[in-house]
Image 1 (tube, rainbow, N blue to C red):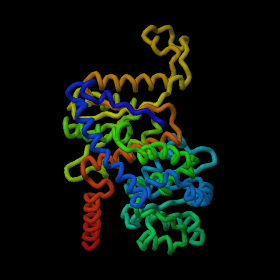
Image 2: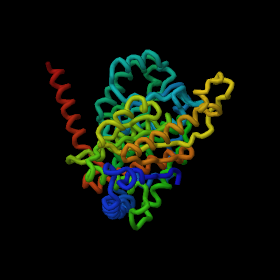
Image 3: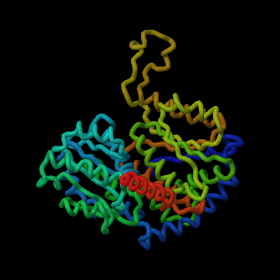
Amino acid sequence: MFYSHHIDDALEAKVGPHGLPQAVFDRELARATPALDKIRQWRNDGTLPLLKLPAARDDIAAIRPHAEHFRKFEHLVVFGIGGSNLGGQTLVALKDHGFGPAKGHPKIWFMDNVDPATFAEMCERLPLERTGVFAISKSGTTAETLTQLYSLLPLLEAKVGKANLAKHLLVITEPKDNVLRRTAMRLGCPVLDHDPNIGGRYSVLSLVGLLPALIAGVDVAAVREGAASVLDPVLAAKEATGLAPAVGAALSVGLAKERGVHTTVLMPYCDRLGYFGFWFRQLWAESLGKDGKGTTPVRAMGTVDQHSQLQLYLGGPADKLFTVLILDTKGQGRPIPAAELGGDKSLAYLEGQGLGDLILAEADATAATLVKNGRPTRVIRLKTLDEKVMGALMMHYMLETMFAAELWGVDAFDQPAVEEGKILTRQYLSQRRRS
């Protein structure tokens, strides 16, 4: 197991009346057991190809030539919305901590919005002649991705010439006729198939997440190995007891039903898990928010949000479940010598401590303070953060989401309300064009 999972501080016996009664937790966990057969069936009959990816390696070999080609560029721009970008961003953050890529790899820019000012700045600042471009859309009809691509194409062609345009482009979309695929065929650029049975928010273990990660230097086979470490026990289990993803789902659903806890706060104490928080937010919200069910996911960051949100968490409504993600950073960073403290006794607590010691102490203190104030708190501890650990965390939350959907009786894999908004957007654009 690449992480440890602790929920005792979310139970009534530990945090009082806002915590989940043990009997309710046991009931919800027992209700999760029938989902095990569904998950096995989804894997075995191919309904959910995602569940076969952790064991697969042949598809990684197939995308390596594309990774090698695009690794030669100075920059790579990825056009995609939601799951088409967030999984890749999360994995790339293992190698690019915000100050640039690893040596020999391009800087990857995930363009996940259509603000024209941001787009214009990108086009102005990036050397397009040394830039590769991915356009990712499962349906091939995503308005944002298409508009981004069509806006860039004339600028890119002006820099590299029509004959070289296709060398800078790659498209990922479903293996069927759609606008994006037709565009790629017209331009003559490579088109990779997005599995039609893997939704965008569950696509991180597919080429959608792994190809950008591979270009960034991530060991993508290790990501899948980590995912398998969480999935395999679920596939082999006869009951949900002791399965961390099922335990997490039972806790969330039980607290929502029994205690009116309708917000779930994920608070990692590690900058490299910042995008992981955003990835989780979409996964949880879009999968579970149906028929009046679900809880609202919030991403907070330690230690930053101790100074912006913790007051609300402790003194505001007791309607939240907190998950504190704590990486063991003890001893990391340069220890502060006593001489640098100038003999100030008020700073004695910093003597011999480094940044790693401080952030670990603050993480532990935040979790303890939440518990002391009666807030249900789950703690996930990591000894290290690498590809295997990240793969394990992502599979944990995908499975936890599936278990929660079964407990709430909703479909984890559709998003009808999102589709309604897309239809209206097209209508508004058509009306304005005519006027």
